[in-house]
Length: 576
Ligand code: 9MR
Ligand code: 9MR
Image 1 (spheres, rainbow, N blue to C red):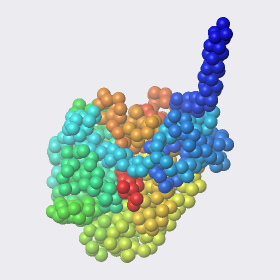
Image 2: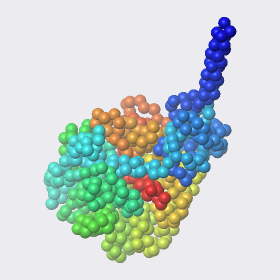
Image 3: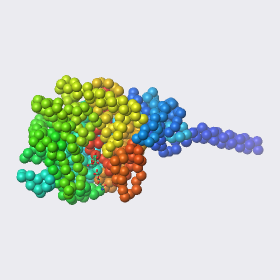
Image 4: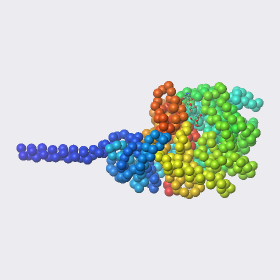
């Protein structure tokens, strides 16, 4: 009996112990409801040691904790005061754990309220992102098979050979009347659609070339596992050459002018490239396309010369000069969408910036003063680049060249703009410099990051790097949607981009490395007649739905500054 009682007592005691243990563990259960909450946003890839590490709390909290995945508290702190933002419609507090440097995987929690997505603290965190962002161009190659060896589960057949493209009525002249067949194969698909557009190709290709030039050490080491890997060139140049080769076929050999675009009359459906059959056309020659082409070819010529491709560099220089001459003779041929064409227009009505950019690149490539005269005349202070606002690209080329000393006043303006970007970032609750949400807002954030990294190269002021990292943190999850905006990265990222290949390939996972356009309120109706709810606050107005072409499309010009930003950070001194 006595013995039984002891047993019972022991059993009770151990039960009590277990209950106590459970109680002791209970807060952890509360802290880890299993799912990360959107109320605490972090960079879902993570933070590198020695850098500022911050999460944003979109809730009221007096304290926060940093914990391991098992729930062990490794750091505690008090968040900053709350800051409201009219563009996101919410209020955020900064949870700063910069002092914590131990590599590992962690979450930020507000006990009893919410837990963040997991993230790492570690070195060289953005290298695989930088490679995937660049490899997105390989997956977007037009007219190429993507075999499993290089494409993994996203292998596919090529489509759109573009060996029999017709000259559209808007592009006809005496040498090439309407309906003349021409070959214009290769290049990359522009975006979620299958078109190829010279204006957008130009800023994109230039940005990759600039990353090759300014982040050279990182790119020299990079292996993308593409068919050209292992040749004498870094893969970023191999990939840039794919599009440069196509761009050259868009120049009319008779007069040097550039066709604005190569597309079907109406957008193809959501079918794979090899299932399409609609006729494709080159449409209208335009001054913006010719100037952008001149700028890009001139820049490519210099980069390729440095890599020993002298003949090709010479050809590109000649082509740039001819395109420039065409633009001089036709200074204001704007693109006007013909009635029977409904694909992207990339329209522009001011060419001062295109002229400045082209003159800058041609001056650097040829050394001829006639270009310098034009660039001095067309100069305007830097702003964040966009496909139709390209003056800053010219300024970056000049200021990172051996002719930098000739442009002291430009450098002053460039650094003043970069300093303004930092000011805006420091006062912004979400720590970005953007205060307007356009179509492709994510690329504006990435382009600000690129400018800051260039400002760092010019000034050696580390504040620019810290600010550029904040742009990357925003794109990777620390934003008002709680999405990591790059496919295949982070724990909550786009699954249904507005991209024809991803929609039609029958593979659940989206192809990795693509930055979606991001929040804005420009076309709130893009999903109609489907009902998809979107925030009316621009910084939160994003939906991971295929129909949302205005927030969830992918595009080559949006990925390029992500390539620059993630490669630039990976290339910093100290990153090994
Ligand atoms: O799929 C098209 C996308 O690539 C463009 O960016 C977008 C804006 O021009 O248009 C998309 O196409 C849509 C069209 O504009 C309206 N009808 C539905 C089309 C597919 O969603
Ligand atoms: O990126 C372009 C954006 O700035 C414009 O507001 C929008 C509407 O004209 O078009 C975007 O470009 C699209 C292009 O016209 C067609 N391919 C897809 C591009 C990304 O949505």
